Length: 405
Image (tube, rainbow, N blue to C red; front, side):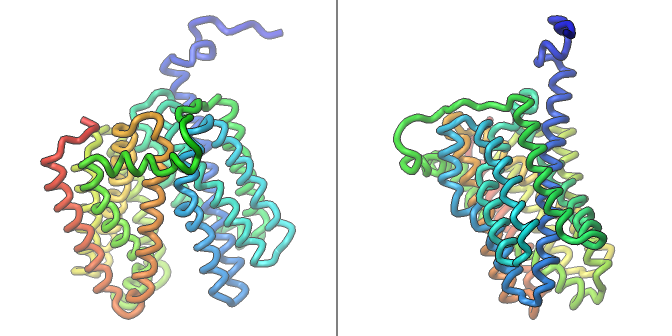
């Protein structure tokens, strides 16, 4: 039998700085592996469905990936506040690991889409759960510090996941990618279990559905968020059109091919990492004005690219836009966290996730109408809209005392 650790050792006292750092590193590593698994399987699934020659399967996949994140957000937030958030997170991760496995044995495109739908349905619980738990679970970090680390992890997964997925699919086919995704979810669930990630029930009144919109009522009942919500919606809708328009700008306007498109896509990921690094180092006080100005930076960068569509300017602009995107995400989540009562945190984070994902869908639809024929004009309009929304929002927020201090 091994001896018990000394009372003052890190193993015995999880409050020591070294233990907190180890806990944060382990937690963020688990989130990185799980996020990379998502990116890997998305690349694998897109390749697999493209082989059918029917683009409707790819469309169905994207709808299956994002639809549940919007539709299930109210229920997910209520569940996270009604039950132990840590246990919900663990069970949802285990469910994700199991849900992707049928696609390993049944290779019909419909099975793959249904598996992604099931995984995304549980992601509607996982994503706001992580945002709700992260500051305390990562060693009592401040919300802005925890969110900057989380954004850095997500950006790393965005850069690394497609590379790993492309190599796996190219060398071994889709099955190893699916198995890797399943394993990443199970590793994340085991890590959360071992770390004892917990947030006991904080909401017990009424039914799940009766309290599902309380987070929205709270946020929209404050002047700060009544200002920020239109800024957020306009910025997300505008900038998400870039996801579709970028390839047409590169090909039709700039006259380059897949290599440059890949370079600029990676540049946005580099910007996400840089933005997270800057916030981690500076740790600014989260404020509505910061959220709005970050949106304005994204808009200004896109507008500059539209006006000067040459390679050097494009590289600079996508890095700046990615950095602004990262800072915007971090500060927005931190403002939500610090201005929301504990019993409503799950529902508040779920609401914001639903708003963002709805903005993505709207932006994709708008881009589908104009990106192919008017890519430069769409890019310029997107940048101008986000810039104007951000600057106007910053001016209005300046007169509003942020609840976050």
